[in-house]
Image 1 (cartoon, rainbow, N blue to C red):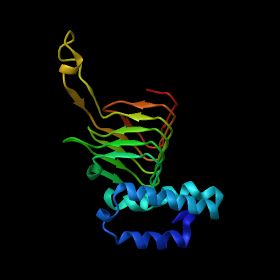
Image 2 (image 1 turned 90 degrees about the vertical axis):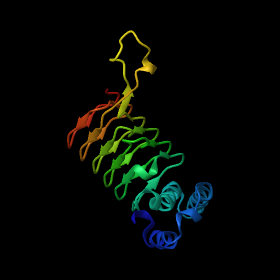
Image 3 (image 1 turned 120 degrees about the vertical axis):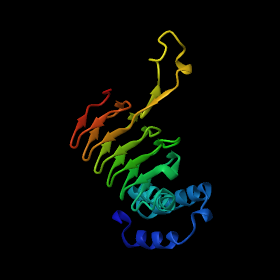
Image 4 (image 1 turned 90 degrees about the horizontal axis):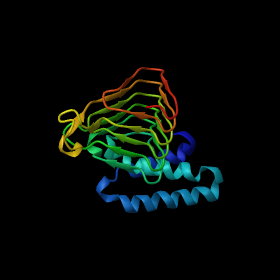
Amino acid sequence: MGRLGGAGRSLEALISFLPSALLPELPAEVLARVAGGAASRLYAQRSQGAENRLRGILAGPRLGGARGLRLGRGVTIDGPENVTLGHDVSLAGGVFLSATGDMGRVSIGDVTHVDRGSVLYGQGGLEIGARCAIAAHVVIYSQTNRFDLAPAGEILEQGTRYAPVKVGDDVWIGAGAVLIPGVTVGDHAVIAAGAV
């Protein structure tokens, strides 16, 4: 349970039996922020952590029962029914995940951290391994506009190409890096900041 210890386990047990329909997103966000404010009065440096943990507890049942999930403020998940998160995944504030469409799928392995403002498009399938560190403002695309059908034609009239992206275990992707459709990154790789 990490930093929340026994209190976190008690809170998780209390909330886990409530149907997610009883916890719509706006009241859940208010509850998370109130918990963060209360924690700041008790433990000045832990308020954001408590808030992110509570937000994760409330959202976990809608994301395949993810345990130990931490969600920062402003995380957006399109197509949550196509998202699978391992245990102890952390999505920092402003992260955007999209798993919509016929091929839409995002899978993130255990103990992986995705930092602020990263955008993960899984419309063509996206698999991220365990113990990965994805820095701020990383963008991963598994779909792109086509331009090869009619070189002189208009881009938007040529449709979309989908290709899965796979990131292995124990990978570090530096800030601002961009991964394009069809890329496979092996285990233990390091991708430099700003790389394409």
